[in-house]
Image 1: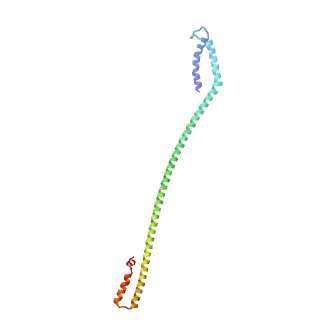
Image 2 (image 1 turned 135 degrees about the vertical axis):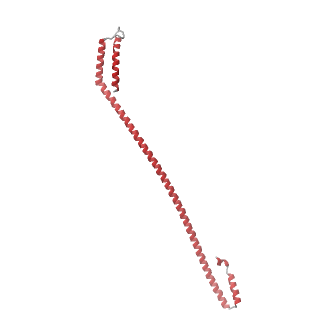
Image 3 (image 1 turned 90 degrees about the vertical axis):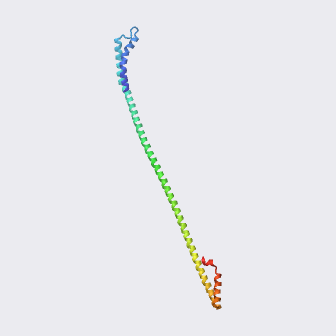
Length: 195
């Protein structure tokens, strides 16, 4: 298309220049003198050449140029479409990456919270076990104390019975009985009774 336009502009210039060139070939004329015969044949040859080129060369050349322009326009449109798709994919990937980062932060925060909860649970469980152990130890100490007091009482009763049987056996007077009981009580250690 462009080639035809440029050719149409070139035709008048050729027509104007052809007589001058024809005169230059003849040895004796001035540049401004016109030769009608030469100009006529030049114009005829030019028109024949123009029509033959139009029929044979310009149509295929023009079609090839137009096809090439269409191919380039299609390639540009395809490139623009591909660029737009790539930009959309890039935006989507960035959004997915941001989403993945957010999910990773959430997972990390959840893991930290779970670890903190487990730590607190373990501390609470250890404290409860410690408290239970202390309570068992206190209960065991109390039982041992009660058993020791019961044993001490049993021994005291046996000693009292043994002391009473001596008193009865010897059948002493009250002054002598009093001294015997005091002597017996002095043999008992006060720390056993208090504990």
